[in-house]
Structures are given as C-alpha cells and as structure tokens.
Image (tube, rainbow, N blue to C red):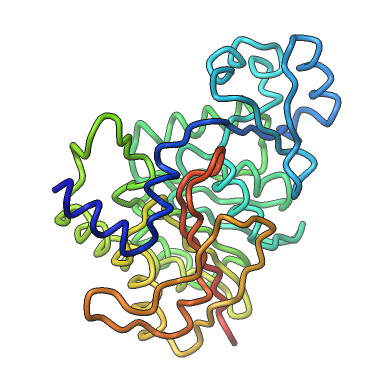
Length: 298
C-alpha cells in the first residue's frame, strides 16, 4: 500500500511529502476565557520565548523540542494556553462568527475548535458520538472555563432530524483517514484505500446533516485532516449536486503553503466550484488540512 499512497500524494502535490517529514515547531493559543497577552510574559519568565504568528495576536509557535516541557509550565497547568495545530486554528477562525450566532460543532472532540467558537459566540453546541471522547471533551471545556458550550453525546449524522435548520454557523471537522498524521519514519502501516472509501461515505452523510442543520443565509465549514480527494473535493461535489442553494465561498488565507481544490481525480470530474476549497500543505507548525466554506442561500 505504500507505493499507492506515495503515488496518490505525488499526484495531489509532491510538496506534501516534504512537509510530512518536517516537525520543526508546534503551536498554541491563549485561552481567552482565562487569560490575555500577559500570559506571554509569564512564559518568558519561565524561559520560553514564543513567536507570534502574523495573523492572530493570541496564537504563537515554539520549537518542537519544547512541546513536552511546556506542559509543566504554570500557564499550561492553569489552562491559560491551549496546544493546537495552526491549521486547525486558522480553519476555525475562518468561520465568521458574531456574538449572537448559535454555532454547531458537529464532530467536536477533543473540543479545541468549540473553545475558539465559545470565545466569540454566546451559544455553542458541541456534538460527539464516542462516549469516552465525549466525556474527555466535557472535562476539557470545564477546565478551560467555557461555560457557554452545550454538549451532546449523539451521532452527528442524525442531528438535523432533531434540530431542523437551527444554527447560524456550523463547523464539521469530519472523521477521516487522517493522512496528515502519517509518520513517514514509521512507515504506512494503517492506511489503505478501503479506509479512504469508508470515510468518504460517512463524510457524505455528515455533510448532509451539517447543511440541513444550517439556517438559510448561514455559513458552514467542512474540514478534514487528510489529503484524499475522495474525502474532500468529492464530498463537496456531492453536496453541490444535491442542493441548489449550497454555494462554495472563496477563502483568503494569509499563508503561502496552500493549494486550491482539485477539479478532476481518477477520471472523475468535480463541480468547478471546488477550486475554491483550500488544501493546507504541511509546513513547520502547519499540519496537512483541507477545508471549504459553504453558504446556504435562502
């Protein structure tokens, strides 16, 4: 299966393989429920010198060798900072959230994105089907001081049947084949095409639920931490073929390591609007990621 994996990745973008070998930095953000920019001075007193990213005053990077060490720091143990990948943070921040929005995080565990949403909106609903992950997520929210998140141990595929078109904003970071987390030094041990196709089927069911739960005029983001077009562009193409009022929006990101969506893959032609999708190429503190912003027109 290794040869198949490498062939597919090289067809998408050879730079992905280069990026998968890089592990130079990690990232964290300040938890604004409990802290502010003074946290950086606290870290400096403990010997850490974080580097701020260009696009957010509350997001920082440090060398990878300090990742384990920082978990013993006072700001970390007091839940003033939250370790989270830059790709995940920038995708969550790409959902334009107003204070009065009701936000749904449809596959929420471990809860990092819900915490970001809860700093912006008064009301967030976080759904997670797996019981163990659900209770860890609830504890995560409590420890980080997020009191405005409702939690539901439910299967996201059926949420819309209970809610109808209720939410102003929806974020779906869908379960996926997790190609971005493959360690090339350990080899391709758990990846196969059957896994990719299985997740593609689940993702199509989830994106229907996400779109149905969205209010007319609302916006949602579909995201994965994988590269396969079957789990990314094909899922968006599926949604567009099913709903005339689904519109893919252009996303402007202040980073260079990105690639537009692929409109053709293995003899399949996708809707030309999938070009507006974003594939983040792994680089330094950015892991591989894919996301798309969709509007539900009235």
